[in-house]
Length: 281
Length: 242
Image (cartoon, rainbow over all chains, first blue to last red; front, side):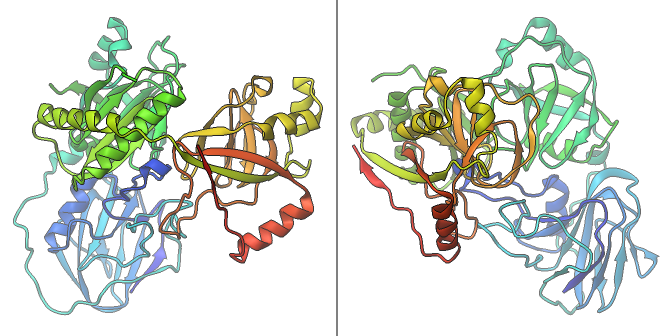
């Protein structure tokens, strides 16, 4: 078991999401940055969909009660094991009572902690991803215990692939044209692709709102399907990028659609970071 | 009925099919039949199909290599679907208590619409609503068929904590909040019925295309029913609706 000594700013358990229930309004959820999360799981030889802890921005502290092996990936958070610095994107062998501590984020926004065999949090509707009103718990709290299978022994990393540091540095979001893209004026299209945008304070697992606003006269549409990565344009000109916990349907024009890779890139951005859209042909 | 459909790729792993942008019950049947035939085609790589007023979004668990190939496969299923149209559906009767304690905006709503409270209740319970689709929140039904006399724009200031089960009106829509949430609708009553239960293998018992009618109950009946539901002694069963 893992004991949560400090839950940090916003930490949850996630896997690759909850499928098959979107037509009754259940969001897909899952890890925000699937590249980093899957990298950590791959190092450990875990199944792709193994549950992992997603930490946001700062200050998480855990204590392991049983031996295991872990891997940390994603945003750089200066992890320390029993006060000694440890490397991200490498296997770390854990002894009972070891304390793992993360400092404030240095680069990126979300860090992943994977454990050998995955965390065994409750499975609801086929997924361990935390989401309010679906799972009993929607965020990790102090003194929570999370179960994992103890593992004794020494292992080499199974994956020889190197973590792409450019992933945390990239600020280009590749996009497809959205369903309502052709309703935009030439001027709006030009603004979308020539201007940069910055992440506003309204950014979370549901959506990222961007700044500045776009001049806009497009009206709402009949409520229609949306996906993570859908960029909506509200009547007052706000650009909203839907993320993993987004609703399944929405009534704002869908002007762009991020690629899966770009959702991962944006997941590592926070307030004030700038991004640029680039049309993928 | 023939509709002009538009097929497009939505992202690497999804295909969107659009009907004309209207709310129409016959079109809804056409959409749902198509959805069913896609589901019955047993393509394991399709992991979700989201249906709305005029769209199906088909989501695969991998990147679609040949989009044109997949679209033509879907088109062939459409022809099949149109020859198997079904028309019967379920009618769900939903108990609602319109007492002032639950229908916190009923008084103000009635005044605004220049109707008596009883007239509002009568109009609200006499319609058979169509469940067009489920979205927004887990178990939130998009209902069509609200009497024009009850249309009223959403409140300018949303209520931050609307209780689970609250029945409201917003614009030309009526609906039930499946969980506590903020919202801008006028709350006219409350139902003890669960609209979403994550611990059930069938978390939402309602389906797109079903009909739904409200009936008024007293506060005492509400409290009894609430207790029965808590103790698993109440089960909602639909009537067949031709």
